Length: 296
Image (cartoon, rainbow, N blue to C red):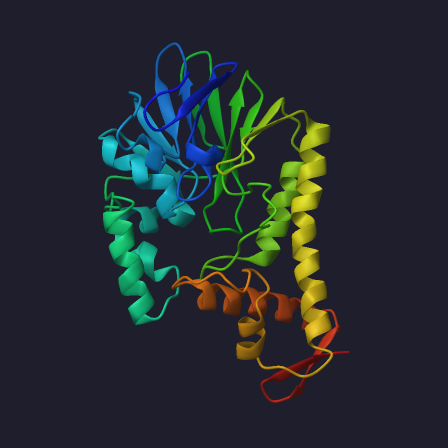
């Protein structure tokens, strides 16, 4: 069914509200989940700003702008993991979490306000791992999947067997762990946890949409995780000659050379820091001289 802004597809009692271009950024794939007593929306995207279905509550997987743009349409209880609660309550806290220089932060702040309608939600409430939202004949259980952000969470919807993965999105871009609160180690642990969950459907917020069956999901998850190993390999190859952290960031492990955005340098630097730290611990990289690293 085509509506203004999104396309709706049903998977049991779960309705995926897919944004334009299969939910590619800046859009995304939201959920509408109905039970006998209540209904809720998960991650209201930009596509829901002008076409928001009614709901009794909103669940947010994590506090990034594309996952909350549609919150402007809802004056109902909003819930998010405790790890991201303050970022949802305060736009200033969210913006600080990106770790940008002042000029880039000012530019992104304007974009959050004008493009994504981001406003602080001081009324937001926190949940923890395993919290259950009972809608009447249908439940939504929180699965904490940190790494992308500290509070990043998925949601397991029963009896349908639908696991919403948020930004463990299975795209060829690969895992993103470039914010101040991101963690490569946590992201890898979260991917391992997802691999252990048997579901009928696995839904992503961006592009890949819904994957059916554990076997196909695990195949795609393994390919997604392989991007992390390719970044390790690329860094080891670069460090055959000594380089500083700034030189590694300029070389880029994440974004293609043509991509220009205020956040690119900061993301590349934090990504390189995390890979460097792990490779040093594993004895594969050493600090050849102060501030310059090389592979062993």
